[in-house]
Image (cartoon, rainbow, N blue to C red; front, top):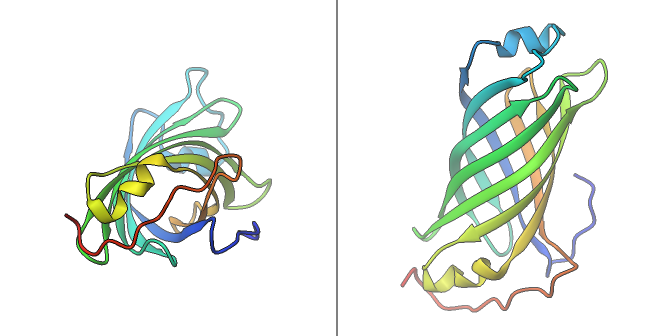
Length: 166
């Protein structure tokens, strides 16, 4: 979470809580206990909700991480979520990434690429954004904090000041 970001590239910080965990034959508790992950891996649907706060984007986020945990104990994240902005607009969010637990710790470092989709006039600039999320998940408490910035290898998207969703 110490990634440097300028006001121009910082989109928001997300603070989310896992709310439901659907398991498919291998439990999250087994993973936490250090049991070997099956050769075919383990699948979890992790539902979450939380807040996003930033100079360019604020609101609530809810979604599902269709997480695949490999025998190498690396989690492959595949998230579908939506943001409801502070002014009532809706933005779809999709991420792909990896999470690796720190040895001997309940903390996992996350790194993800993020894209957005919306037709809300005020936020259409996000359709051109490819963002990077760097975060830390606490597998004991179910909390995740992520700093989201625009990928600096791509020119920042123009950001209009049009009021409202339409």
